[in-house]
Image (tube, rainbow, N blue to C red; front, side, top):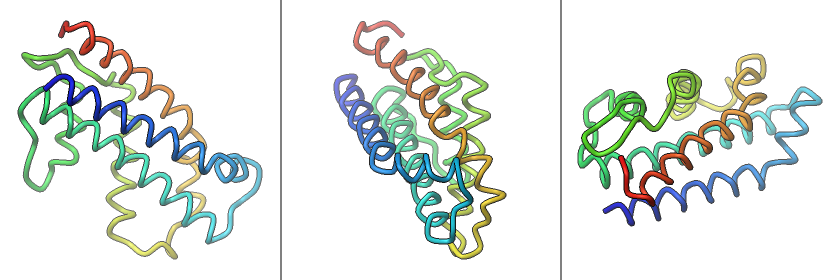
Length: 155
């Protein structure tokens, strides 16, 4: 089970890295100039993919390590919360600060999946887009620390 989780986590980290590499030009450009509707839609898709990749990691951990995947209407929120808690099998994966930052991306993911892209506003997205690379570095650091515990074999 641990080996499967390790493999899945590494795969998703690579996918998210590729996402940032693929869209690095766009992410850099929107730091300098206000994007138009097409760029806003593309950036929204990047943020959705980013959080979706993280959620894939969290589901893998819940399934392969915890053997307990949240269900119900609030499962997206519950699985994120679960990553901040200790279990019999592992220590917390995410810090409280990272959890708070990711709740904003979770909320955006929900909004994005249930709305039309033409109503996206840069003024609202900017506060999530600009810190996105920094947020990813923090999450990645915490995920790698967790991976180290899986590889070494200590909770």
